Image (tube, helix red, strand yellow):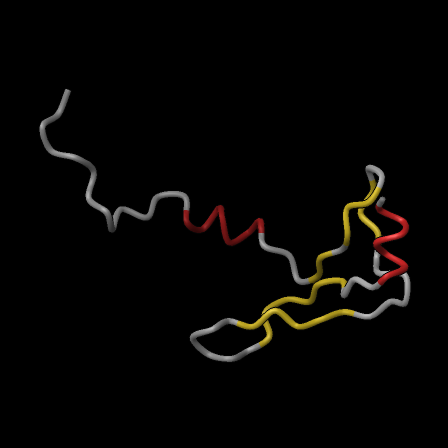
Length: 68
């Protein structure tokens, strides 16, 4: 056992995490990933740059009806 904890800046696995990021996200309804009923999406921005880094399905009343 070590008396010295792992440094906070030890970023092992960070590259693996970034690979898991996707460019588009859908709704998870009834066990399936589905786009919004009307096909609309909304941009997900990196707050440090304002750049759109992904798109997410934009939910509507029709999507709520499908989900509940």
